[in-house]
Image 1 (cartoon, helix red, strand yellow):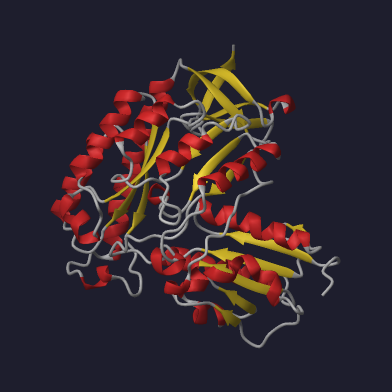
Image 2 (cartoon, rainbow, N blue to C red):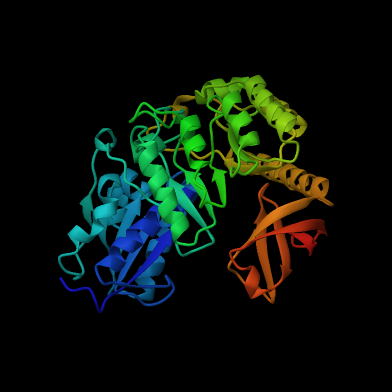
Length: 433
């Protein structure tokens, strides 16, 4: 079929990994002649790359699907991503959906487009999670000055609250050599910074017998890359060798994202996490020893089954003591077919939200404290290709967001600046010296 006069729009929900995959899927459409348009515009085809990490993510996915059908009722609507893989029948029954594509076929959507006539009910192409086995390369381009580079997919952990292994299959990865080539290719497109993404990137190596440490050492030698950021790494996989190398590297940013999920050993045990609070605290302490000004972001789940009021208070006090920069907080969400559903002591939904709000307020204070601690320092900023009311923004290596008057010559460029003070909108004022 000739697609040269057809338009396509994309929407992405969820994680950075999804963004890298949507960008790659979009390039496959453009190669077939489609013209990409904004999602809010009327398009012939809409592709929604969904998330299903929480009940809220499911609801957002359904909302975005319905938005596409409302913008153009005659459009051909394709749903892919984790929601499509986990709940294909539900997705297929949303009015307007024509195709539901699971994990194995999300990069081969084009082959299902024999025509763009509306279907009577969504046609489903998914597989059992045990059959999700191939690694599909992906990287983002065109949206920002940074690129999300997919280095790993899937997870072997099966934490009791999580459905991601069922949505993405077992842990797998490509070779380091192929990723180095891909990073060089990304840099050649003018991208100054890459962010390594995956489901459990610290678990890198299952497919090739390599290690995550070897991967970041190899990428650190790619001279055309300006800066490398590391995505989320499990505390038990964030070894002293990795922390030490990051502190000594030429290109890797002093920016850590470490999922804690619960601040007590009791709840970590119920979650089937693979570390203790003492190990987590040791990791934070080691980072601070080597990189006093590193950014440390932490994931948390509030109100997991079994979390009594006393355990939450104990967790809060532990987190309050940690020298971290920011928290990413989610109220616990029941997920179908997870073992957490069998754990007694269900926390009321409103109580989960209240606990999450307490942690969010703590996070806001920690972030302000971290920013204030950096006032007066000189840092290298990569300026983003954005213009808002005459201002532009950028990020330091240690993930401080800065703001200055719009200057086109700064776009996608590194500049050394002095951090001068906090703005009301939470960014940092700077001066050029």
